[in-house]
Length: 174
Image 1 (tube, rainbow, N blue to C red):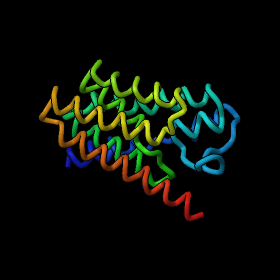
Image 2: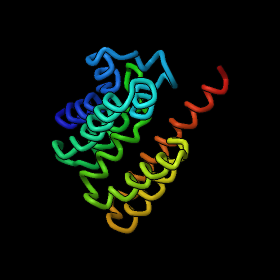
Image 3: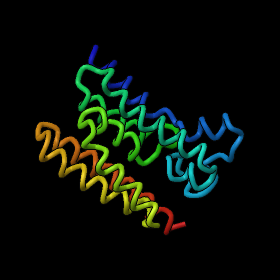
Image 4: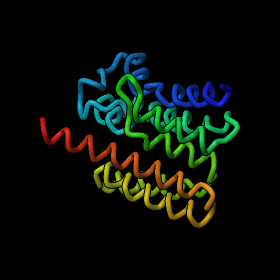
């Protein structure tokens, strides 16, 4: 029962919609009705600018980092990402929360894919493609440095990529 409560708690932490919250608190547009309709960091930047984008990124990464509050950071962190992606109320795509977990577990090694993502986006590569590259790099780092969690990192990467693909396909069908 205790584990069920902790898993549910980590899912709920992941489902906190910081993009929506910051947009509302700062009197900006509702992300669900603008841009891609996603409440994550990229859409927050595009629709509501740097302040909302940065706050959303920091808090979404922070909720991933919150996995350290749980007894098994990798397991409960994965539920934070799942909660972020599959929130009952319009979730994100999971990249920022995933980076937060990786920062908590892999420490400074997680900065490599994060900086790669930022550099690619700065060079005008679509954030979706930058995410694919960063996730791949994160999997390689996990395989080399912490093999015990490699499979979990790989499965979360697949879930995030799946969410991106589904989102892209739904845009094309509109």
